[in-house]
Image (tube, rainbow, N blue to C red; front, side, top):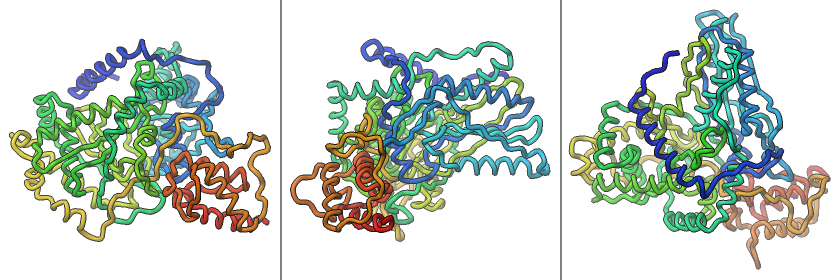
Length: 614
């Protein structure tokens, strides 16, 4: 294949990546990640613990990464399988699974990998329908829910003709992230070409593996400099209100993660203006886009203090760059707006907020949540519910490079939503942009999201009009856009307000979960068998003892106080479940705990279950 000349987007991305690598290199000598011999089991990272918990709460494909490609030409499927085997052998994360032990997950690394390979032959399907049938099969395959106890990379090869295939690969987010996809594609391509040319593959050296990174993260969190930074971040986020964004339907107690996506193009000239405004003020282009989005969120919610989320790579050391793994971290953006605030001032504020959050990306989001300790709401994501991100095309549009095979990326995605709304501005390789808006279908109608995209484009266009940035205030921009006032926007229709997003995937401890009941030593016999009904008062006392041990409550407490009312968190839910399983031999669904379990409710539930088995 002939390489395309670098675009403006490529050059800008290359410059930013070079500056980031220089910054990482300056930190290397004093804070290196060292390699240790690979072991079969290890503690989960903070981010992985949160995703494992989320997977237990909702069996949905909200945390899978799906990519697919048309392959036209003389594909050797045996070489493709061999290349995938080599990729799995090379990357520890692709040999990782998460079985439970004593009610808690354990990161388990297999010494040799297992390729999950599926083939579908559609050659006999009549020609007019063949490609459509292939795309339908791919879409159905992408909806699968991955069991975390089994291989977490899945592949599908659909054969349409001897010279035409559709290839899909799917990973669970717990072992991979968006920044891992280009690595997977590049190395899979090199392994295939090397096999075809009968030579050794030329791949970058790996000095560490993901479990080394997770251990390094835990050790750093115990150091005083990092604790001081975490405390400063806690102070910055203290008192931040939840975003009251109106929804079309009331929020369920436990989110299903069902989702959809709306895609809308952004005019190239509009982005060119955003780049020009950024250059003039020496700001990030992301800050310009974020400023317009902040005005939209202010208008929709009627709030001036806004809590938004975003994503960072989390790859703060150069030795992490060649790894496939889950290192991406969530950042919190606290944007403060005012009616008389000038747009240039708002852009500068967004720029500073993004840089500050980027500098904190080495501290796991779950630990930030633990430090801030926000008020918890059942079915709620802590700190924020709406994400705004900017993604470069090299991450989202990977293309395989196979010997003699023409490739064409296929747009496919898992039908889930990780937050209430994820509003992503995507930069394509040719310099164009588009808005990709992922939303929770149990909360929003598609029409609502299309209107949101339309209003954002209107605000961005007005903000970037000639001299508007230097002359207009936030209130004047809202008025010029002709959007409803904040009060009218929130009150319109019979709409709920966003009190929170999907079920909390944190906070979680960085280290392994000790799921044993207090005062008990581990035993090999596993959980107790259901022991039959107990007297109501005795059963209540047993549940109350476990409740006290998990939550640390002292003195008298109300049996009707819910899980969240006594300060429950994700890790406490896991421990409560594990202790109830050990004590009574009954596995209580985590979703029931998050839905508002109390001593009284747990006693009633256990009494009914024990009566069933007696």
